[in-house]
Length: 107
Image (cartoon, rainbow, N blue to C red; front, side, top):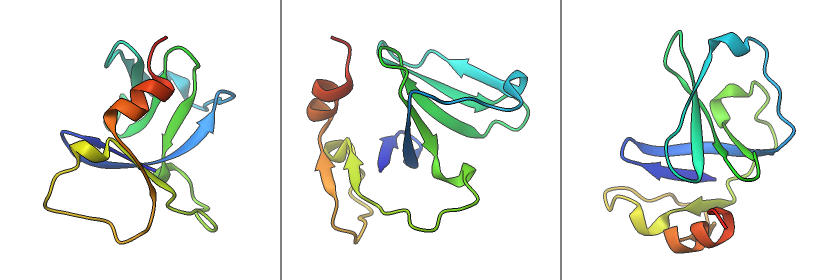
């Protein structure tokens, strides 16, 4: 899955709600919206995850995982916000901002 931000695409893995971290003292969480927060390394600044506030569901950066064998690029979210200067070749499930907010947004 990828997520568009003002910085560009974010490749992620939906890791669900049962997530634990080693080195938690190096993680800072930023309250980025009414419905999500973002975690990043407070030593190097790397983006680690975004977490849905209501469900505590974690979307983790793909680059954090050493074993990426068998991963598939399945969906793109906020497709209506995607910059026009690039396009992925994979056939994916594409969801608009409205569809994402309906699915994951605050109730």
